[in-house]
Image (cartoon, rainbow, N blue to C red):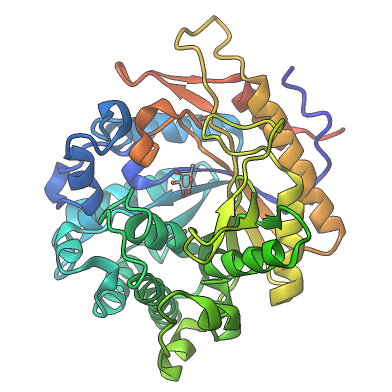
Length: 448
Ligand code: FCB
């Protein structure tokens, strides 16, 4: 059941990892001088989180991190993707660093390196210090500068040991879910703010990349979620709506970061208009990066519909298999994503920094841990999809499963289980699932 057979071979230098993020696993939200974040406040508001789940203690990683490093070591990964909580490091979002917050990450980085596990550190994975959120969050033009200040503190504290950095996780989700969808903080529905929020996120990325070059040697890049868009029919209306929504999501960050401009179709069709941002800012956004990190889960099928933000609607795919998130399982979309990125932006090094499946799982554990053959099938098919893209010329260097642990899935709470390792949220007990053993075998195999 857990045999890696069916997974193609990858180069010896391939990076094999698992991913988490600070707010989703740490708990102990106000420990050691940490300040509140927009997410800690949002999660405490009644009715915001499905089933009233809480992020504290959540997986309790802040206290159990040694156990989690042991799990990574057992799994045989050579890399671990984590994020830092800005509000542990600058409790007010500005000003002097909190040494106790930095110490936590410093110890974790040392423990990973001792086991030969390379930390891939994401500076910001959505949990914004509350005072910055109160000042208008990413709509506020001072945020990019604040972010660069924070990044500089981190590079100085950890950059002697951490080589691999990414700036902001999935800026599209921050901008869309927070400012249009209204389901993440600040829970607004303001399409007119969207271009500004997106622009400030990109500028923050660019300023942090520049700060990095001034401080350290190493590798840095953005992390974007790509959801390839397929027209529901070949009617000109559906095809045009698909191109618009593709620009609004998939090209919104990478075009300015890698090409130095916003997609023209966005400037022509975004409702209310797309601001003319200064050329000097676009130059900052285009600061050269070392790689692009891609999070991939699913695709979208699109038809024209005047009710949508850019005149689009997503069409459910009847008869297809879906995960517990309601996301269609579509590995071909990952091949296409990697090929499209290579065609559009050139042969840039690519890392898949998230890919995985939430599955409904029985709460009871048997002697062997949980059996999760659907997750194994998901991982196997997506690894095959990556290999195909590589055979067609995409320069993919690594893969991280989302997630190491069952964790706090944002507004959906702890019900959505993405982990290779099961977490009992009452006791904190961790139990590797069959998929963890499968992944261990894939990483560790010497022959096939
Ligand atoms: C991504 C997020 C990650 C997790 C997965 C399921 O959008 O980056 O934190 O929630 O989805």
